[in-house]
Image 1 (tube, rainbow, N blue to C red):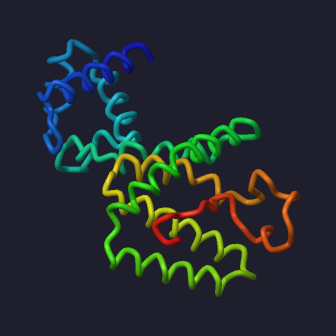
Image 2: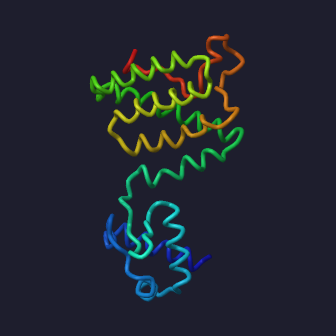
Image 3: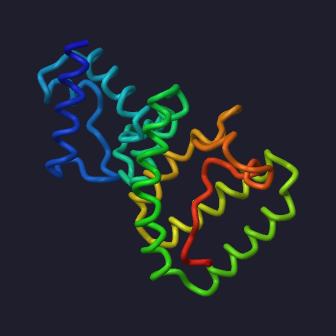
Length: 199
């Protein structure tokens, strides 16, 4: 594993230094291994790890390339990790979202176009129509919050909050105040957050 870690570190260093910029093709495996002074097996395993992390794109019969390194790719693993969290750790994720979303929503309110506002209004109508369908309600609610954050134009923020929101799609997830609200509020999802952009 140490050899693989060394290979990962060296490839990452090549990317960070600009030697391998986004879209660049890596040298063939034998050449890359010789260049880094490591075994081909270590390089091969490193490439697999970095491919899983969306840092590299292995194209069979063509070669291995550095991806665009866009936040939506690199932060995708966050959502997978969030789906595996449990109990108190999951509550921490909800706490982080509640810290970030109000600020992001305020920024969205400043940058939102009329077209995006109309899109949000339509999603709200769809949510009202789906009030008795919990599954559809969660889908529309997720779409609403994604659309709000996306209007900030900040891809890193959008990808981060999308990843943190993945817990909401898990079966049996309830809001933090569930059981302390009336029947009307019981239909809300954990994603519910007032949005000044559509208030």
